[in-house]
Image (cartoon, rainbow, N blue to C red; front, top):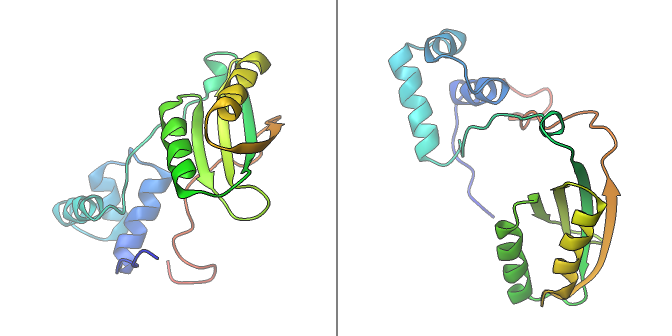
Amino acid sequence: MPHKDSLDRIDLRILQALQEDAQIKNRELADRVALSPSACLRRIRDLEARGLITGYRAHVAVDRIRTVTIVIAQVSFERHSAGRFVDFDAWAGRTPEIVESARISGHYDYLLRVVVSDIHDWKRIMREMTDGDFGVEKIVSSFLMEEMKSFAGYPLTPAGGPG
């Protein structure tokens, strides 16, 4: 299990604010967390260097740019093998349509979010999964109808905890 980094309240407030708005100006963020701009920027750089901030991204409304079908796929393997998982992970990483991949516990081994043009495009991806030498046994596909709550960041403190 990875070690837990030691963070104080100000670090947590900085991280929360950046999750809410990664484009916040340093001066505004510094005011919000009661630091000088230079101290705030030092803390941000430290959080980045420690790997606690792993990147900055824009949330893009892809369905307003082109026609898409978003597939949530549950994938199970016939046998669990570290080598097959590594190969599958590498394939998923090279496949641009797979925008999220998580190895999970339970009845399935992976949960994928896949963005395709249409059902024919999804069938192509499924064939690649099953025809590859990964040992994929079963794929259960669900199609996103409407996103009710999009990912907006992680809760950084337990409910009712300090913040």
